[in-house]
Amino acid sequence: MRGKSLGGLSPPWVALLCVASFSIGMLFTNRWSSSPEEKDVIRTTMAQMNQEQQLRLDPANCYSKPKPLNEEEASRTITEKLTNIKALVSRNLAKDGNSTQVLGLAAAQSEDNARNFEASSTYETLSPWKHKRKKAFVVVGINTAFSSRRRRDSVRRTWAPRGQKLKQLEQEKGIVVRFVIGHSATPGGILDRAIDAEDLQNADILRLDHVEGYLELSAKTKIYFSTAVDMWDADFYVKVDDDVHVNLGALATTLAHHRRKRRVYLGCMKSGPVLAQKGVRYHEPEHWKFGGEGNRYFRHATGQLYVISQELATYISLNQQLLHRYANEDVSLGAWFIGLDVEHVDDRTMCCGTPPDCEWKANAGNACVASFDWTCSGICRSAERMKDVHRRCGEGEGAVWNITF
Image 1: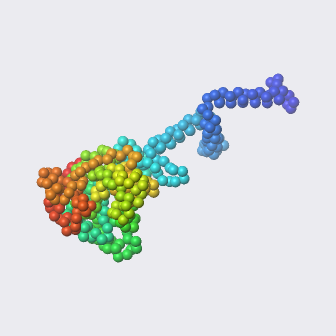
Image 2: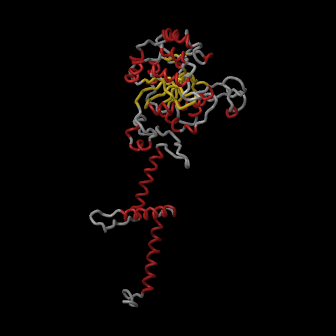
Image 3: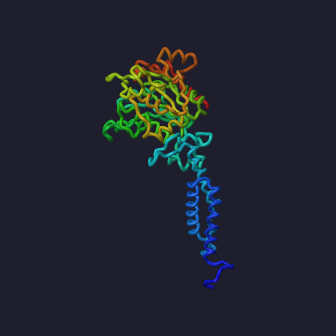
């Protein structure tokens, strides 16, 4: 009845007791809450969860509503979500502000085996590859130019397989060999058509989304590794110049010893001078970054041939826009790994001299991985001399087919 007290108490007293009970409850609740920020998150999450649950009606009873979550349940849910986020962060995947650029070794931290990415459902969601990549042991990219047709043919006649043997080597040994070239400044012009016709004949050319130019070698290197890792799921990726002699069997045998290493960078390590004088070959416009006059570069692999593991190729692919390019492409590659946990392997079999140097070693049963002349940064007059170097320094045609790893 209106005006009657409830249980002997007047309505004002009832209201006062309700307020007091609420305040006491909040006091005890606050004692167990870590911070005001966490309480706000919990309350907000509770409200959102209760609202979502109220929209989900029981099919057996359209008018029934689920029981709202309490703060303990909401807190537990938040903890689970934060744990999932930490798991993703531990895989070195992050976003920089509003940028979608991934910072870190994205493909590096998936389980103990870096080559088992497809087995992880989390990686499936975050993988930058939206298609099935071909499995391989090593991808050998032979850097070439439009004007180097004779060099390419000299390589095809000597150490690089052709035709059916090229496919067979890829299928049986997982060794992929491709000449790497971009496009001319006038797409579809005579230079591009000549390369297309050459590829139609030999099926051994990898075209890059890149405009060819001598001063663009650093950019080409970056695009090559990005393209190669997008097409092939390989353990290693090699860049070699088209005027260098390579023994593929010795290369594969050497790399097999490093197969379990996740971040490895192989080549003939050097630390050449930083050339500040304009007009000289290998001039470094950003010489001031490396200290005073007469300073030297950090250790990096010489540009004639170098090898990187899958994680490092993936790192380049995912961070293309952030990687700075210096004048010299071998310096650029070395710079991209400075500050990363990368093992540098100085392998002098990757920079033997031409005969008699590589010939002596081949006769002793220690065929070199790569041979060239330092004075020419490759084999001098390679189109004419490659055949002779191969005859005297080659490991024998059966070497690459007899390797097991």
